[in-house]
Image (cartoon, rainbow, N blue to C red; front, side, top):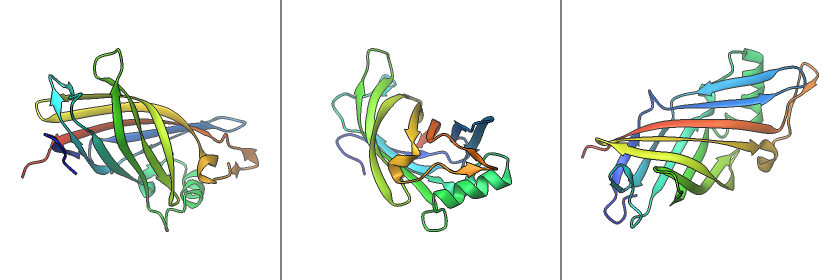
Length: 175
């Protein structure tokens, strides 16, 4: 995965977390997930991505570790994203363009759910210090992009727009 003068950083599965939020006609639905795995190939200068190098990242988010704290909701969510056939939501970052704000980037890549890959773009903060990278971003996704129809739960419709916040920590890979 390394290119140019890039170094490999491995996602810290214990500290990295994803949070998701949507709403029904009655109340908000919130969940968190852990156990995220993956690697990032990047080169940094003074804590920011090196503009002269490429950046690549691939992560896997285990669907089975996404939880709202409500077993019935979680079972419905796991069924909707076919967690037995596709146990992970996969995401890759293939491009990061610096913004006017330090360590803030316009990123693009793909998100794969139920075996269906979709392009995305968004903004993320990516910073490196002492061999540790912190990555943070948030974005709204419409689940219908992956042919997932919003479910009804206890007779109430669930909004197809899901707000996702991702906070990753990655450490320099020791070889």
